[in-house]
Amino acid sequence: MIVHIDCNNFFASCELATRPDLQGKPAVVANVTEAGGGIILALNNEAKAVGLKRGNPIFQVKNLLKAKQVTVFPVNHAKYEDFSRRIVHAVLKQDLLQDFVQYSIDEFFGELPIDDAAVLRDYILKVKDLIFATAGIPVSCGASSTYTLAKVATHYAKRYAGYGGICILPADKYEVALKKLSVSDVWGIGRKSSVKLLGTGIQSAWDFVSLSEGYVRKLFSLTGVRTWRELKGLPSIDLKSQPQQQSIMHSRTFAYMIPDLNGLKKEVSNFMAAACSKLRGQGSVCRCVSVFIATNPHRLDLQQYTNNLSYKLLSPTSDTLLLNKVAMGLLENIYKEGYLYKKAGVVLSELSDSSAVQLDLFQSAVHNPVRSRKLMGAIDAINEKFGMNMIHLSVQGNEAEPVEKKGFKS
Image (cartoon, rainbow, N blue to C red):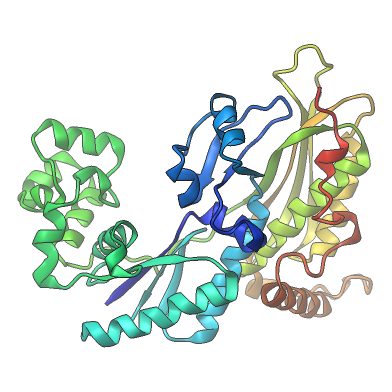
């Protein structure tokens, strides 16, 4: 059986995992700006209960946020990626799920060769409990014969408390489950496709499955046919051979504008640390490093400036120390005094498999690739076990004192 794991209210759950004093209280994650703008990106169930929704502009709901004492967290993608890595590390170490695959930052798939529903549920519960014990993140799980049907099962696990967060969908329950599921809620059917189907009278997932394969081929591409086959219980998707990313970017629009080089160095160093961790996580190295900075284009009353610079290394690497040193040099070259900076980021490109890197006989003794690999591996292991940035570069600063607080609101 395919097992699907979906983190509940992931961004909000990550923030609340580090703030146990706020458990049970409404909280949202938003890309807040210095002018009080931005939108809600994620929220916990308590925030939904007071009438807030994902996508709400902050300025429209500020009175509700204040009246209901809702905690607003600024979005922190580096933190969420760290939690995601910790989940992957814990599940792989547990070694219950076979062919474990991370599909997105908050979704995972695995396999359990078990048909007995009771036994299967017990195993899934062990994985579910491990994730909560390790990362403090609640998850919902679905299991069925295909990836798409497992996602259908998770849909019901999330929406009906009686499942206890785990829904197993056997073959004799496909029809009843798909008849109750809107075709627009099927994984693999996008907004345009669902509009097309609804326009032809196809309302439910069961209506879609009842179509002939030939008709589906006329309406959609091969992706649509695979989805149709998956809903019929015929495995047609392979997630195990997902291609690696060809570039990795970490950037952020700051809540407060940053007026100085030191403030930008802190942010860019944090971006680089997160990018390098992701780079090593997929078993890659990079040859090219890019850094960019920009002021606020919406503040026409302020001087505007944007710039970027790239550097190509002699040998590809995933060493945070080396890559951050390169990034700091690039940043110093493009930085100009007298501007208030609103955004910055790093890009790692020209990626290749780390196992294919050839050692250079003339490699500087200062940077030894073998020693570097061991050091980075040890740092990643400690951070995965004890939490985000337990070991970090001094220039990254203290997460508890964000640089934005020292910036300018206007």
